[in-house]
Image 1 (tube, rainbow, N blue to C red):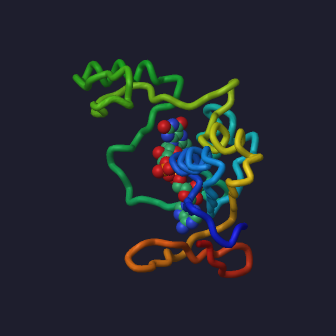
Image 2 (cartoon, rainbow, N blue to C red):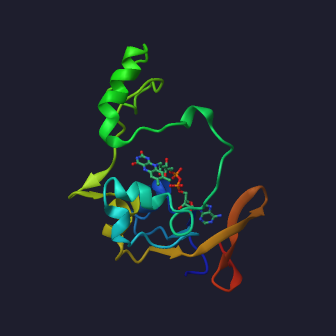
Length: 170
Ligand SMILES: Cc1cc2nc3c(=O)[nH]c(=O)nc-3n(C[C@H](O)[C@H](O)[C@H](O)COP(=O)(O)OP(=O)(O)OC[C@H]3O[C@@H](n4cnc5c(N)ncnc54)[C@H](O)[C@@H]3O)c2cc1C
């Protein structure tokens, strides 16, 4: 990992992978991307449908945070009964939406998933993998940022826990 960089991106999730890839489009800019988790190499994560179930596994691919019980989430429908579920919702007067990413999200409908060549497509796969060979983009997995380093009111780095010990990235 470089001792210093121009941009330190913390977390390599859906948004951060795109940010790091876009920043490193400029070869004169050094980008370090820190991710607390591991790589998303498992084939299980690439399978539409199954990938969602695997991703909810708290031990391997998920932080395992839990919420208080949510009354509105009781009795989730299985996929094969989606049509019947939608029809029932419509029958009860709920709006049926054809695009859940538009301005109105109150209602029922199918949500979009990112799939390429029949596999689930994460932003890491779409934006980081094609840029693996960039010398100005360093992806560090297993690196948990524990504290931001503040200098004159500006975040200039982070303390990180990686493997056995505490390090710094600036
Ligand atoms: C199992 C599952 C399936 C999903 N499927 C879909 C889907 O099909 N379609 C859809 O639209 N949405 C889906 N979602 C929701 C979607 O994943 C989230 O809305 C989206 O990932 C949020 O993006 P984000 O960039 O805000 O955060 P995240 O993608 O959660 O990224 C945050 C990243 O930062 C890392 N991180 C956090 N703290 C630190 C730290 N201190 N140091 C280093 N790294 C850190 C985390 O490990 C994580 O990788 C799914 C969610 C789950 C759990």
